[in-house]
Image 1 (cartoon, rainbow, N blue to C red):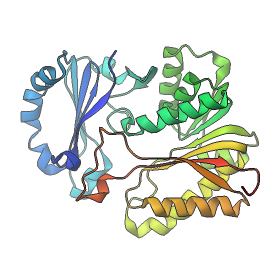
Image 2 (cartoon, rainbow, N blue to C red; image 1 turned 90 degrees about the horizontal axis):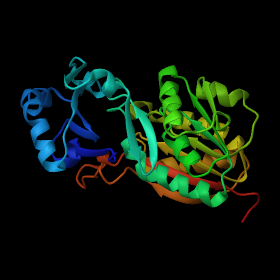
Image 3 (tube, helix red, strand yellow; image 1 turned 135 degrees about the vertical axis):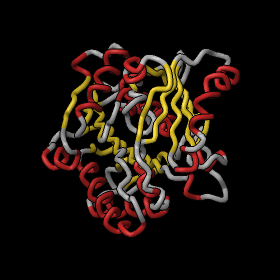
Length: 310
């Protein structure tokens, strides 16, 4: 099984509004603008032939999606259709990423079915978990379990997956089955993350915080910063001294320095100290266009919780 990859990344590839992802043996085309919608008939007609020539493999199904929230800015309707292939198979697809199997819903799942942009950061987390000799991991806003399944593959003793979506946790369960993870190594919790953290008392070796975008526009930036601070303060309390917090923001309105500043404020308010052990962004198949800083949207910061002033 080949590895899933982004083939076309919208403005960064000078094709505004167009995303094409490859989930062997399927492909997903996503249109995010009215202008690109006009090109869809042509794209659907030629996609399979072009991709098969480029990838040198057969495309067994194609999903065309126009269901991203950004379409609302242009007032264009949402849609999803299967151009060809087995709809059920694509809704229950299995993908592979650096030795870990994941379940992906290419028809109705978030983004085009999986968060491909976090690939490198997940791999880095796995390396840290392996170096630590495993431990207990808390995966918040887990979606289909990208972080937690990587941690289990790297030797984590147990992962607690938390998400308010039952559909997301069904994908996690499928991923656990695909990777033959023993039942006692995973805890699945359907709950709002803030409510979970408000009542949780357990301490973890690693906590991952990967929420949806809190900053939808600049006008609510201040409110979103407070939410990020609260979230990371609550997560910090669940971390043992010497443990690791991997925390992310996918809001392009929130600059990296501002994200680091709010993390520093959150740790300080908890009376703690931290070393930065990782700073990452989106994977290389999500390129950044120099003249368009909005294409650099993903921030991932790894912090080690210090026991005292270094």
